Length: 513
Image 1 (tube, rainbow, N blue to C red):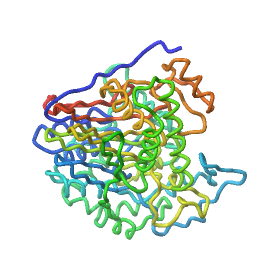
Image 2 (image 1 turned 90 degrees about the vertical axis):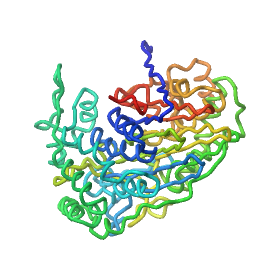
Image 3 (image 1 turned 30 degrees about the horizontal axis):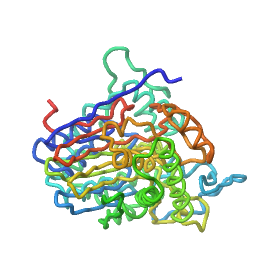
Image 4 (image 1 turned 45 degrees about the vertical axis):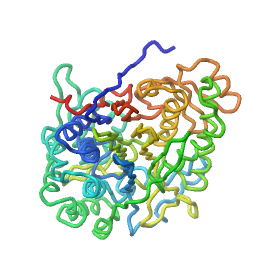
């Protein structure tokens, strides 16, 4: 029986808002807006800070997508997701005997080589992508965007109870790698959090890399001394990423995926993201669901639309990652109305669990996003990009209203975004109400139903699907971790972050002391 409720108010400001999964990142982005920077400047700055203050979710060793709609409704999409190494041998990832997969799952790999360790790492795109976003759409330099991240790295990682929880969840795997254990553990154990004060873990190696990139430029990560150091560490651990892999990596500007929902324009990351599945589900919802219906038929319509989109996704487009993906998302709307949704990820929590010794950054486990079975739409292949769950979105209405939204949570990302957008469009909920409304998750064989729903909702869903009633807990995350910023018809700006997260925040420009 649920005995408590968590509430987090929306933040409002005429001068722009940054919503992110850590308040320090949102504050850094808000300061950029206050100094006159635009939404891209703020989003990139916030993403760089996230790589320091919450390094197990995203960072320089990962990749992602950005969607931006400027004040004149010009839309842009940037793909800077990870890429499989050019010299990758798919034969190394042998399916474990007796392991069967269907369209909800795939077979396990011998030794879990695709899940953790050096052989799970793909070529990272975050540095190139964030720098490219600033080059084309920003107003500040990459060096300027790095300064708050450098300051936080020099101060060190603050380990409180929430950070200690994240470390504890993956303690056993982190202990396998000496640099990871040295950074996050104390003698193989979770650091002890003091009752008073705080525990700060130095990040000298990461600070060294960030300062080097500020001095030499982002290209050094791919074609300079930093690249040489990265490849040395990777090669020593058995990873096949080479200098050619880094030097040949390029983020790609693409036309955004465009769709419509109830007369509004949807701009999403195209191609191998969650955008196409969201668009498919919203199209199904628009045809099958009447706005203003009661909760029970609405949740059934959500379940059917999400389930059908997932069947297409996992059979025609390839297989998405497991449900425990960990990702960071930043949403920004600036004073001029430019809206940016930026998602960056290491895939799993702590990614590959590998910290590279020389520069202290966690690396992704991008091979987990591929199907290990050959001759599938998303099979492991040298030089290929995987099908990702990330789903940054900007929804625009003709009356000037627009919302930048995205989430963390692996498979649960687009189902959460769909329901929040529907609550706002179909039920007239404000941003705050939509974020606090209970949700379902239909991304797995058993549909998860928030315990706050009335029995009628559970009953109608159980007539068609297996159902499990669960709490909307901090861990495990059952319904994703969304962040959004809304520009209303009047031009007012509102921001919301995940109510259950103790670190997530929406921060207004001018509110940071």
